Image (tube, rainbow, N blue to C red):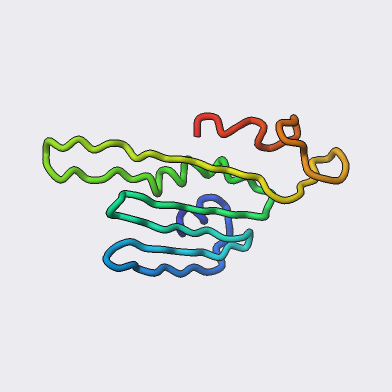
Length: 123
């Protein structure tokens, strides 16, 4: 989590991690820009990660970095076991009001000034 924040150009103010029984971890970080958290379910091979910011810097460029850090393949138990690549699902939502130079208020969905109009593409 610390690496993702640092390499994304965000500012980590503090963080706390809690080990879960029998396994897993939950972590939350307070960012100057808002917050980040993740929760793991190792027995299911699942991790969820939430990143929220209220700054102008887009998070979509950080998606490959997040995938590199968190979508780690499992180690095979036996030599002949085939391990599948991790499945990564993304959800992205722009919230709040942003003035995009056309007056006072948010951009209309799917308008040329909508920062999400380009879609998540390859992500």
